[in-house]
Structure formats: structure tokens, C-alpha cells
Image (cartoon, rainbow, N blue to C red; front, top):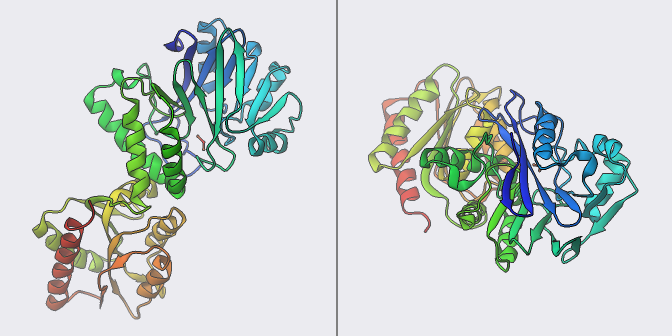
Length: 407
Ligand code: FEO
């Protein structure tokens, strides 16, 4: 595969990862993921962001560098916007092949280069506003962007071609194949990427939404013609679309209303909690609110998080298990807390066998999330007709609250 041309002096190279490995060792990537880097040429040549040796990625990079008449050995400067190993793990090998390559990162990033890779020479720390002159009228400008996605992160801007190299920010899951740019995708392909974008955001970025909001505000001062992230498609036709999308996602857990949808997360040991959930779903259906349903542990947490993050309403239906919550549901709530899934309207229901306990743990786990809780419904064993009537009504109340929520 050849490198992709952005402008006369900028090209993209990428590796499509299609292995069964999980991203970050946690998140499944059935549609793959891309590792993107960018070559910027003046009199000197810079490579923006690197890669890890993963599923043939190094060979893919070498082939595309070769199509530009370059190799890892001939790069002058390496800009590391972010030190997470998906973008840096190849650094030790690169340095072996190219000892004189000069590395640029933020001060915290440079410390990570020293500590992770034991590299101390030809390493320069940069800060917001610093410029790298490539010669021939080409320069790059750095802006620190802490917590997008780690504290050391920065973005790089090409003021000549007005390209923002944003690393993780504005990225998504999904491999690219030969379609690298937004204007090459069909509507159906864009819909797939949008699904993978919100899942990536909910899995990787949601904890840092306040920082996304700040970054979107500060970047609004730049004239951005191309958004070039290090995962996912490059936005050259409509760069504002991915910025708008990220701003919307960042609002979901920082005070703006999520979508008027309900995400149902349920588990049932012998079907009794499921009987109650069916009544809740009838109540929701009566109000006509869209519902996305995930059974745990059957559905992977990655997909549960994507739908739950976007939804204004949450149903957690799970039984008591050994005095506490059904463990797969407890795991999902732990992830919600870690990723700050705040501001939901929620209903918790469930059956218990010889004693309860799930509700107590549920309340502990959601205490910091600023959720609006409808009264919980619990019953012993099989729900009675009276229980089912209450559950139907709770479902209707939740759906009505979601319909009335937000903007
Ligand atoms: Fe793509 Fe946070 O690394």
C-alpha cells in the first residue's frame, strides 16, 4: 500500500490491525483499529507519532514509507504527541536503526521517553507555542493537551497546510483499508465509523471529557482544514464534523443532556429477574423511547459502555448474588464510576433468593455518579402480579423522564 497524500508536504501512513487482540488489553476490536502516523517534509523530514509492532504493523509502515522514498532510517525528527505504547512501543527499535533521530515530546512526555525507553540523548522537551522549523518554509507548532489521553499529551499543528495532528483525540476504532479520508466513505461506512467512534470515546476518552471540552475550546482559535488523528479516518472534507462529534460526546458526562434513549443492562440467574425486566420493557415501549439492551456477561463491557454512555436513561436489572450484586453487573458499575458516567436517570430492579443485598451495593457504587434514581423494585423469587404492575409503571416513568430530559 502507498502512503496517502494530504498535501504537497504531508502524507499519512497507517497500519491496519485486524488481530483478535483487545485494544489496551481490554476492549475488543472486531472491526480492527488503525495506527496512523504522518510524514511532514520541509528540508528535514518529521514523523508524527510512531507505532507498536503489532499484527504486521511495522511492515505496513515500511512499505508506505518506501512509497515516499523514505525509511525509518531516514527520518530526521520524531514527534511524539502521546507516549502510550500503541504510538511508541517501536521506539527502541527505531532508535537502534536511526540513532540520530531527534525526538520531541512535552516535558512529561520526555520524562516518559527516558523512563520507558532509557533514551536520554537527542530528546527535546517542548511546550505550548514552541515551533519546529523543518526548513523550506515548513514548520510545526506544538500545543500541550493534557489528558487527551494521558497527562503528557500534546497536539501538533501545521500552520502552512492548516492540519491538526491530534493523536488519540478525534480518533475511533475501525481499520481503514484503502479508504483513509472522510470523503471516501459511503454513508453506510460513515455510520459504522460513528458507532466505532462513540465506542472508542466511551471506552478510552470518557474519563477525560472535561479536558476534551477545554481542548475543543482552545483549538477553536485555529484554522483547521484537516483533522489528522492517530486512530481512524482523516477528516479533510468536513473536519468540523469530528470536532462537533467529540464536543457532543464530552457533554454527555459534563452537564449536557445525553440522547433520549434508555440502555438496559441485565443479568438473570434463573429467569426471575428477566420476568421483571420484561414488565419494565413493556412500560418503556408504551412511551416509545428507544431502548438498547445488553445482557451481561454475554455482551462485552466495551459495547455496554458505548450505549450506556450515550443514553439519558439506564435500567440495571440484576439479582442479589451472595449478599451483593450479580457480579457481571457490578463490573459494569465499576467501569461507569471509573469513567465518570454521571447524570443518568436510573432504575434498578431485581430478584433475591434467600436474602437481599444487591440494592445496598448498587447504592454504594452509584453514590458518586449524581444519578437521579427512580424507586428501586425488588422481590423474592418470582415477581407477583402486583410486582409486575409496579415494574410496568416504573418503566413508563423512566421513559417519560428520559423523554422530558435535556435539550
Ligand atoms: Fe492511542 Fe492513548 O493511545
